[in-house]
Amino acid sequence: MNVGDVVEDFTLPDQDGVPTSLSQFRGKPVVLFFYPRADTPGCTIEACGFRDHFAKLQAEGVVVLGISRDTVKAQKKFQQKYELPYTLLADAEQEIVNRFGLVKPKMMYGKQVTGVARTTYVISPEGTLVHVFENVKPEGHAEEVLALLKK
View (cartoon, rainbow, N blue to C red):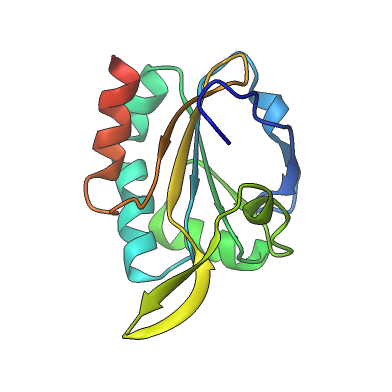
């Protein structure tokens, strides 16, 4: 997927099991961040960064959506534990992470494993891809996204 492409609609259950479609948010910019696994150290840092900057993101009119391969139940637990004020989508079947091509080999504790590449997409109110953050470092990422959106 390249900047300028229209992001194809999809529907996934949110942390409450409610079907949620990307198209529901047309008319607003969307920050769609993919993370490897709920309640792991890096993912918690990233998710809490978006939590801590959520009011500023909302002031910019932005919708924040987090996606991982976790179950609805795991997403709900993660959201409650860290008081995340935005929607988490459960892609347990890996349909969307595969569509975005984010399941990739990576190193973990010196061993090669397959996992979700931490990636964030910024989508325009019209549904086109505006920016892609690849190989995201969790620390400071929300600030980086916010700075881009304020431009």
